[in-house]
Length: 140
Image (cartoon, rainbow, N blue to C red; front, side):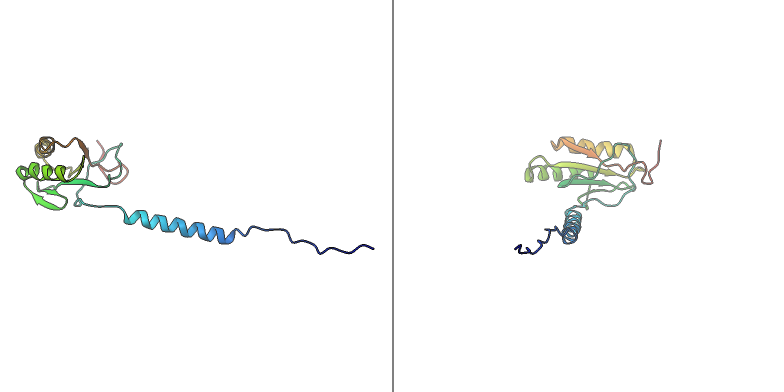
């Protein structure tokens, strides 16, 4: 006589809870990444560049407005004070990076004075901020 065996249920992997968990992790990391960005510069109309990149975190931001005012991390300084301020930053940080945000309407001579002050302070990691051509910038 044959005894019937109970049929075994096939093992299933429930993927809906796994999908919910993956979406939760995705949103969590997106929000966490957005909160880590540091904006130290003032809003200026940047010139366009095809090789523009995103701002580098933990940098010294030097902003030159269209009116010719110079700011270091949103604090107004003169061009003469800029070198001393950058030397203080260099002593506080190891190899700080400098990003120059100069409005496209600024005199070229003022930008050269700012770059000269950066060089005299002994800082070697320097970038000039631009925005990609497709983001409303003018094109030569």
